[in-house]
Image (cartoon, rainbow, N blue to C red):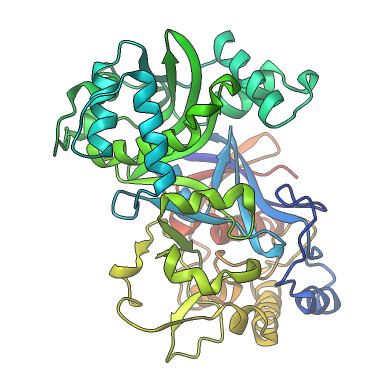
Length: 480
């Protein structure tokens, strides 16, 4: 086990009857009602949920490094405070796909250019060869505007802006917006203390990047000066806090968590501006990709992210695919799993949950005609029959059954049960696998063969969710 383990609770399956995005106003165009019927009739022990609403796999995290989270975010997970979650893309009406972008994918739209021009005019217009140089020169010369990067700590000033934003923009009841809620959502994190606080050179690099900018400037500082950890970038205009960008700086990219802005400055389109600035910052500071959270193609509230360009994660193949390539596959909220047009993929692709996806251009699917194999796989009775057979063998031969706590037999992006069984057959998984668990107040550092049936099931659910390597690098807290 590495020096700093990943410490998190056993993954649980959580369903809500109403979708938080469309509020149940959308029809599920990929309901797969037959799947739920087949599962419920064939295996009464399985954790089966009806279609509609939303379903996620969630885990409470006590400790993790930015390296851990970097891999998890590339497996389709996101965090809210210390809660880690991943959507089940088969269940529900709104399909949430991980989206990332970069300067390579960003093509400034007319509206985005207007946003930059309006902001530049507000803080002090300056000449420039293009919109990026105008924006950077304006920030360098402005006596009115500045931003400050700092740890994601609580302050009354931040909370008051958050409350104003939630009430006026999201129509929250003022009595429901609490300091504890703000802290748990946007300040609290499971990262190590050193990553939370950072170092002086890291903060100096971030806080001077606009000042040091010049045309064609690319900062390639040494890794120890590159910030990793939870971060707030505070926007000030005339010394007044007008916005906060909540970010996670990770080894291979920057994850945008939330953006708060003062409704009095709505005319500046600060949300759009922040996204543009942060994509450009990732480019200038060689930070990697910019992660915008989840993208829902047929949801107005989430479709704005498409304007920043980028790629969506094919969670089954671990390949990031350009949005424009996927346009015909996403119609009516459909799931997508890419495949070569000449293939006839009939089962779930082999999925090892590595956390190291690649871009389409670097994959086996590059420069070839593609098709969407999602319906071939997940509207296929054989997929569920194979999963049930694998579950039965795991139960009878390896004492790994299913109960009210186990994950569903079929979830896109989880290691398929048939592959778990294959790993046992090939001795990749065996009784000598080292496992660490916190169970009934005791730390168990043992091997798979010495676990009880419920502990073995928990270990397998962790391997399916997080991958074999991260499970071995973890302490799993069993909460039942």
